[in-house]
Length: 419
Image 1 (cartoon, rainbow, N blue to C red):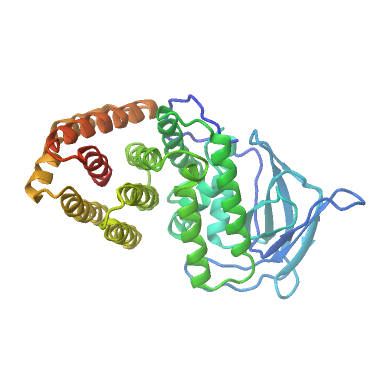
Image 2 (spheres, rainbow, N blue to C red):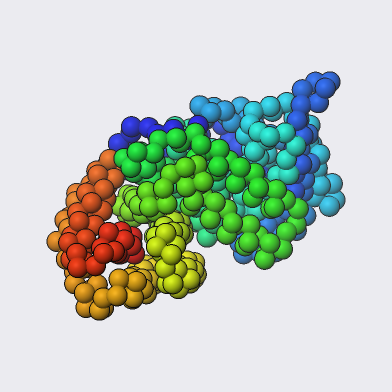
């Protein structure tokens, strides 16, 4: 269950594996309990996919499964299979938990995939180095008690670059799990501060998104299909709370709190991994922020709504393409400039009036920055963000008081700041 926990330790926690889990590259179909013995059957393929080379089929790999329960306990299940010349296997396993890790080993080769079998017959994802890393990170999050972290969260954050850093030993699955847990805890806690606490509904949305992703990533999918499936998963993860009933504004601020937590508590990580994690957090914040701002313009029946949607799309695309922290910051600056112009047009005021409204928040922005430098817990980050949003909106509302749409302008400009 994706329930909120009251832990305050934000630094990396290195927790020992109690058993070695290894995995398989596979296009898997998972069926529910058979009438005879209650086993599940997992079918798929094993390849030696890695970031640096093309995939090839693995013959003679031994395939097994292990169960993961809600308390993070991982236990090897009965049953094993051997892959054919084409890399295919059919595994009948006693594993009957909602989540399992399927493993293939041959000599020094190991690969893994996380399987969500909670809804009966399921096609598991084709295994890659990325699914291997996802399985390890998810297993670590369960061991650490990171109840905020769902399968969708892990798949949204862990990309091929992070997988390569884990595989090379430059970073660990444990530390990546801690970083994702910090971000998701900030996300949850900010929503609760806004009055939304139905995290079970959010979890259901995210689990369904992961099952859809799992289905689309089964088989030997093309690069374009893979990219489309990943993009849709990111969208679903970034907006899961709005689908569960939270307001789009609360979701945008919560996702912004998540990216702030990711930035605040990853300083000691491998630099390449830290950048990729921050980029994923920034991307989901951008998706949520764009949706909230579009909603604001639509609520005003504004002629600027389509332009706001275009600006949001450009922000998302620029962050996806970013290869440095500076490019991410530049993307937000460009977005803010676009939205400022649209707000000026909607309020029928000059650009200088909007600029003055934004400048009026300089003191509260400085206070936020100072608070974040001292923040050592997720609670401190969330409280600092909440105080910033309230104070910044108040300052902008006062600065735009000559307009009948001052409230609208203040809400949109604060969101567009990217803070």
